[in-house]
Image 1 (cartoon, rainbow, N blue to C red):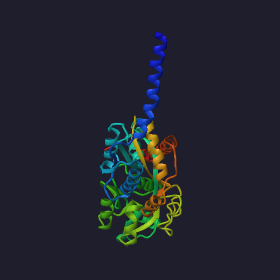
Image 2: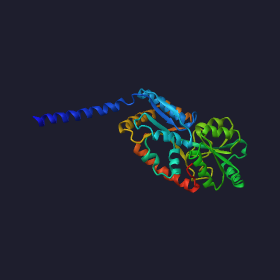
Image 3: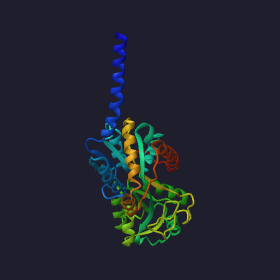
Image 4: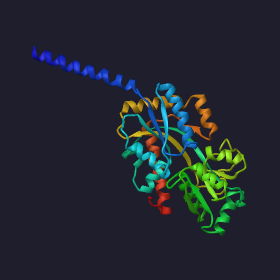
Length: 325
């Protein structure tokens, strides 16, 4: 009889666990979710975050509140999320800058194994090589010739140490054989404002920031960084077409969670993000801001992409001898 009672108790406990865990997962989220953007409001990442947050709020029934934490090339916001409680209520929407900062810190897989769980890529976006209108160049070849004639006299802006614009600039310097002065800012909007004002000469600007200024004639575009031409600028050559065949950099934007976030929460978020990315309104909103909606992928698949990319940027960092701030 005692054996029978113990068996009943064990079975009851197992059934309670079996039914409680899925129920708990299905209740996520039961309060607002913070979506941290480590860049200023108004930029590419902010637009992607607000588009994603609106869609996920409608699908999951809780507010996804975008919180901008700019600085250190995306590092301040990323560090804040890495240290947050891994419960699914603090997420990060960032860019390739995460891997670039990891390369600068010389910490392999910093963005994957040690700090974050990559949930899903949201979009991809090229950058555009733009120069101040008064610089007097109209092609990549002319910019290279000018830079070679004035070593360290031209300046290139970035959204901060370790940002995509920073490492794109270093990659350009290496491939073109030129020297330019790096001028870091706290975000892309400030960088392009100073480019328009003539305070700096060159910028690899993300499309969301660059397109209005290009169309308004306030800056001059020379090339796009992606492997294919950019639909919003169909007549603009790629960097490869402009004479630098090894320059191919398409920036990703993705949602990540702190390491230790429950697998059921990660799975729920990934499923909803996959649904979001096939919606026509979401795809259109991303496209209008110079982004292409990402294809569905698992966290493991995206982790593999990040690991390969890390090695590329580590090579650039070592070549340019970039040090952590």
